Length: 203
Image (cartoon, rainbow, N blue to C red; front, side, top):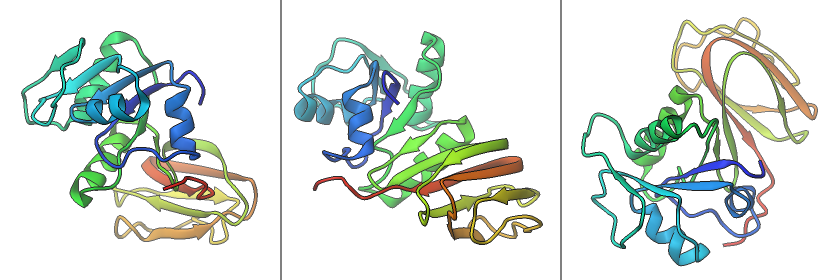
């Protein structure tokens, strides 16, 4: 994901050596959600291209602040809307997890709703609707989260196939395993797929 547009949320900062940090280091532009801007400046010694949110946790002064006071959506959704207005397509979300569990869950499922990928120090969440082929390490954990119980799926490359599974709850298709380097999924509704990556990030 070189030269990606990054939305940096205010969860745990991507660790050195991990996939999320490499994406951040090579980003074409970085849009920080509110208080993430202070951490980005302190750790990366760079200025964000934009800071977006209600700015209730912003401490420093930044050149390009887009203050959106409404509370109907979170700062991640506000940052995604800003990227859309600017024509910055397919941003990847970093820093979405950690610190507060409610923010973690809110960020992940907001990103899935928006069709955005989330990369963490442990793996990535990918929104899937229709057919998708996903790269995976053989033996890696793969979990599917289906918010809509009407979802129906088929799969190839998983230890426990999803063909015919009835999604009676959000988490009934978690804790699967990849049996090859490619996992092929077809879904009638948008789902969030977590794919584990090697934990190569340093503390």
